[in-house]
Amino acid sequence: MAGEISALEEAFRKFAIHGDTRATGKEMHGKNWSKLCKDCHVIDGKNVTITDVDIVFSKIK
Image (cartoon, rainbow, N blue to C red; front, side, top):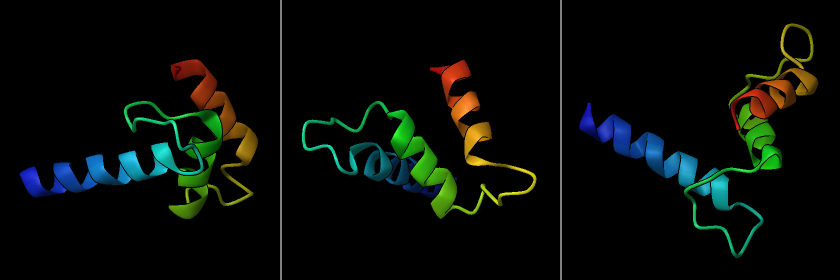
């Protein structure tokens, strides 16, 4: 399980720094959250839309 957690943390870090040379990887911006959701096929355009993931992000940040 520890290996799974470290893999998850590394995936988060990669998405958090994507496109931002100043990012530390500890926080994620909304555009990167949307990219993560798209790349992981969370967004399907029917049940979950880009607007849905944007709302989730704005509620938890």
